[in-house]
Image: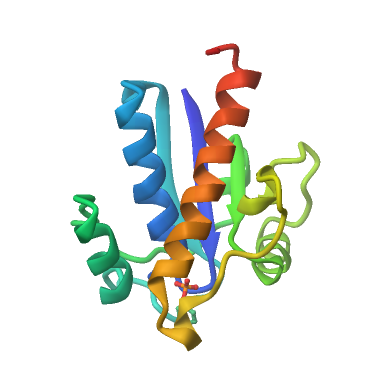
Length: 155
Ligand code: 4NP
C-alpha cells in the first residue's frame, strides 16, 4: 500500500483537489486498492469545513466528486503514516516542517517538484481561478504517479 498525503494551508482548495485528482488517476489505472490517498491543512483555520465551491465545481465539471471531504489538520504522527507528503507551495513545506519536526526519510516535497518545471501550485484563494490551479494539480499528480509507478516497479 502506497500512502500519499497532500497538504496546503486550509485543506479546502488545493490539497483536496490534488487528493481527488490523484484518486481519479489511480482509479483509471485500476490501482485503487494499491493506494491510500488523503489531504490535510497546516493551519487550523478551516478544520471541519467542506471543500471550497471553486474546487468542488471544477472537479464536478470533470465528473470527479469531492463528497464527504472535510478539512483536517496535519499532525506530527502523520509523518510516520505516509510515504509521500506533498505541499502545494513552498510556504506549505515550512508549515509541514513546523508540525512534523524533521524529514529524515525525505518524504516532504512540493507536488510540482516531481514535474519537468518545478514550481508552486497556483493559489486560487486570491485569484478565484480554479482552472489554472487544476492544470497545475493535474500536471503534478501525473508526474508524481509516473514517479511512483516507476520506482515501485509497476512499469
Ligand atoms: P487552500 O486555500 O490552502 O488551498 O485550502 C486557502 C484556504 C484558506 C485560506 C487560504 C488559502 N485562508 O486564508 O483562510
